[in-house]
Length: 442
View 1 (tube, rainbow, N blue to C red):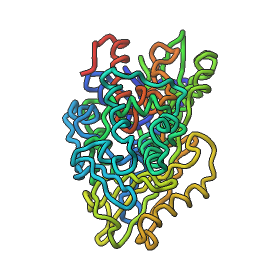
View 2: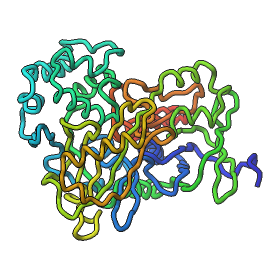
View 3: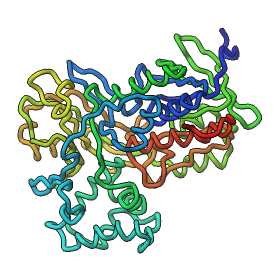
């Protein structure tokens, strides 16, 4: 079979089975469209997937799945239950060796009150933005410089650095204050979330089964080599399946591989000089280092995520086996720690930055000295923590009228996490259904 020979035709082809691609496919099949979802890897979930290592279920990236959000609504759309267990409390902060639990009330004043006299002013600034009593700062002002207007307290600055690192994989001097304030003022600060006892991949496998039940097709181990274009529109893709390149036609195409990779699949000439230049100018991939480890003795009695205020690179940590003992063999406690390098939006020394994160873990938890390291994943370059940091996103639309991007390089301003990717999938499905002439997504 030659690459030019077309084997099938679909209403929509979705390239990449990460959160954005899975969401787009789910909304399209729910609207009755004929959908093909193609994924280059051997599993669903992209950078929010899982793998098994020596009997442990280890997540490759994202772990926290929001409840009561469009993420859950996407599952509801296909009648798929969201199999997550919510820790209580969901998020705590470790400040000067003490655990601060915002679920008890008090919000920012509780978290910052013991550190700075400006705690009330900092907390009030989010409310002022939300109520329209204050304008968002200019895009060039960093979160770090915005915070300096209130306090120079080193612990407060490290805590805010770790806020930025935990949500966006960026440092406070890299993240625009406008994006930080948008998130905490409008998108909510301390959210409900849960962990899947089968690893995050369990959720994607469930949603994949729901997509198939609605008639959608999913091809794994099927990398796309080219997006074909004619008369300013995407017409299909070349995809490698079982070692054979097939050409598959489609009325619309949705890409979850990031704008830069999408440009390469289409070709710069078809995308146009202005769009290509904008992508090169705007996009700022963000890196982190994910440390999966296990201990015989529990390090701390907290079932959710811990964000730190006295660390150099370690931003947060979660014990997955507290809520999901199935993820670890008997007698083991399974943890994931997130380390964000300096810089996170530029080149860095992997070895040195990883060691700084490991030293933070030793400093915070003496029991870490005897930990079993399962994996250390440096998320950067073509497989980053985020394809572009908040505040540096491209629009979902492309110069081709029937091609859209989804994922964390085209999210809403200030958005972050897996939830933001799911939202882009829903938005792309709505735009695609407009082109397909079948109204709106369910």
